[in-house]
Image (cartoon, rainbow, N blue to C red; front, side, top):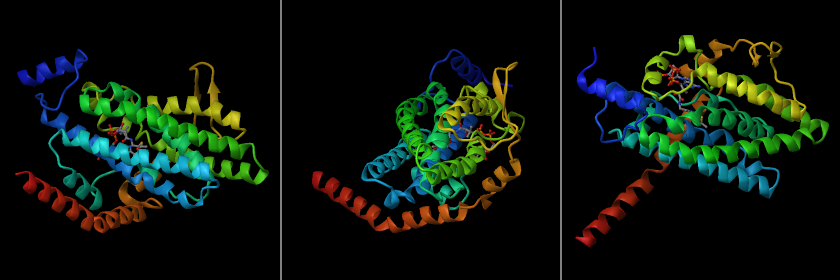
Length: 310
Ligand code: ACO
């Protein structure tokens, strides 16, 4: 049974009205948004680590500046998203504490290692490509601060995807060794990228309610299909093979059919047992601890300024 307040709230959602920070909202709506936005923020922050691994080994100065700019964008996305979450009445310290204790989730994809330079290409192409497909609809989601943050994030993500595809093009057109590196990166990143979209619709516990609240405009499986349909021709253009023997164009549906995702692997990564989960968390905790003197100095400086002004 809905209260009168909840009924009016749902009416506003159904009419496409944006919900703003100070508007009345059901506690469960607030909680769902804090959950999703903070997971998203953590993903951006942890997402800097796999690529950070290659900054000092980028093949040219130009590639290095592009990679640095992209990683800095990700830090910025994390900060907008933490700010968007804070509008819902949670503090950044609480959110970070949940990340550092291992309680909060972040995207499974960032628990895989970056073994070669070609991984910078595959991440931009596949991971940022998937992020865009998932995030473009979020620009129209019901919560105003989240939807507005997504607009700039998506513009920057499309630069990230383009720079990744550009790396893949150079490698695919390069020496046989370079092409093999590109193929190896595609082999390793393909399935984890499909997992980014979350469990299948049948197993997605949050989907029904999030759809009703217009936090989700498309289902996990719909967006995953969109990614496959968009990416297969791009792989063909590169002359690379997607590592899925069941991948096949289906003229009846107008979509590519594809093989079964290894859900056991997905759940194992979510439980903290992916190839890099422990390393990623350790790195973030160390960065937080190492930054303590700096945060203290900032506060001391701000206090001094306030006193001087008073
Ligand atoms: N990695 C880690 N956890 C995941 C993943 C994933 N790839 N996919 C789903 N989950 C988690 C969900 O967070 C949820 O956990 P919780 O209930 O404990 O919070 C659980 O698995 C069940 O999944 P769903 O019911 O489908 O959850 P939801 O409705 O939140 O949908 C989705 C998941 C699609 C990821 C959604 O939260 C979303 O669109 N988030 C915003 C985008 C985002 O976070 N992107 C991060 C990667 S992109 C980037 O940062 C570059």
